[in-house]
Length: 147
Image (cartoon, rainbow, N blue to C red; front, side, top):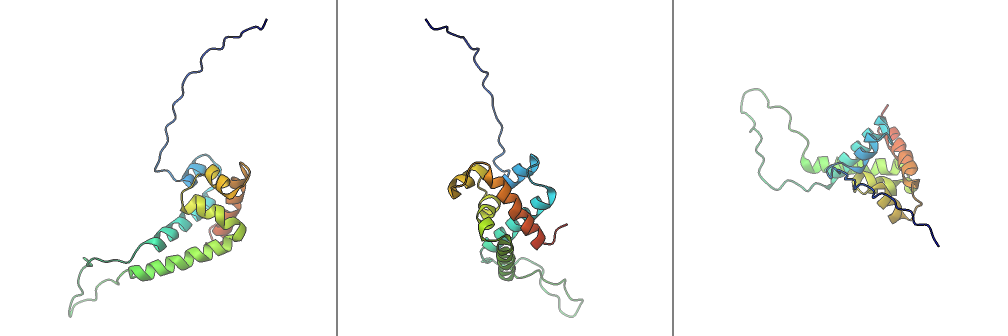
């Protein structure tokens, strides 16, 4: 006859998830990436998002240039030119990361994919992505000349 062991019911646990938090911010908050790597990732993501913006299709509401008086403050960079410049910076940073590292970098930093989902999509073993991501972020930080 088998002995039956009664185990107390485990208490249900709830977890709060901030859906607005990026995977990179999550890794930073838990000490998996350092400040330099985080800043490199944020710069890369900023360039990616700026490069993805469409051209301005509405009227400019900035101040009109004055006649005769002082010159107005210089205009900010044309949105189309800013988009092109950001695309060039993004492409250069991805190239600096290298072919084997750019996949995980793009998925986690730019696409906002979780680390485990990115590992699964790339066919990598569990927990391999964090190491590769950190190497990629180090290369991007070197490219951006972050100290």
